[in-house]
Image (cartoon, rainbow, N blue to C red):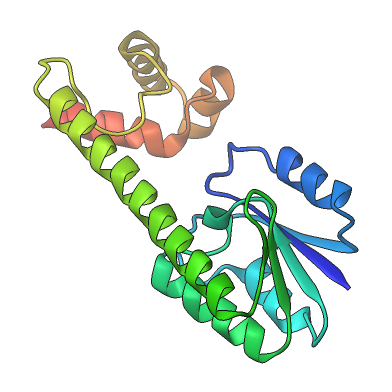
Length: 184
């Protein structure tokens, strides 16, 4: 049996392209999740590993969807080979359980880890540069403007939190934080 595995790192990303590629490859069942690859406990990936049996094939679109690091990838593939399970990475091909196949997989895993590390490094560099700007503010942008929050706080003088929340859409917790900030 052919099993597919699709993963994206954030909830905002779309799994559709990976799932379509895996379905086109003839996967009988596709496990998918929105979970960062840096976490060890990927529930759907674990379900996939529990489901596969001797003679089955696991298919992923790219190596970086499969494992967190070169060491992790090598360990997973070694375990799968010991269980007589094939691994097919669509942008690389079928990974063979031969000395040459394992060497190529090890090298490619190293490159995938290197690429991920470089992305992290460039992101950190960009963040360091951005922090030098006067208007830099870390974190998510505010959902409501200062004017909107001030208006809601004014309404709070004659209405309950629940009423103000219904009128403005601004949550009670946001109003409490804004009120505390004013008191400082």
